[in-house]
Image (cartoon, rainbow, N blue to C red; front, side):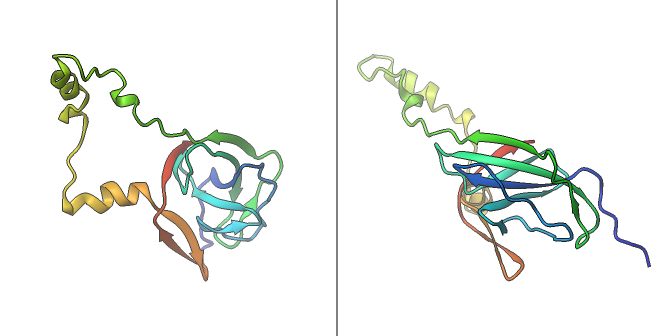
Length: 161
């Protein structure tokens, strides 16, 4: 029998809103995205250098801690000393900036509006791609119920490690 192998540089990222993450993962414990360790939520577990953070609220501060670990599932050994940390401020929406340069009294208003609304700046959404284009990328929330990941709809942003 061969022991399961886990690639090097595996990380577990914990997130907490509005205050620093103080929680530490327990060795020999496999965590799924969406699970909670105290007041911190697991937002990523894997080998990528970036991930999509879900359930992000515009204008909020998020504190992140990334723990490196090795070992197969159920035998994880987390490096709890000096984990990588960071803080991210989710940008607040800026509605109206798109149209701020338009002059509705100008004789070239239609041309100005056409330039801003240039169809080349957008992609078409059809019934067949609506869920994957709009819903899944806008409102997906990670939750774990009875040890199984269960995704709900919420918002997300890409965070780089």
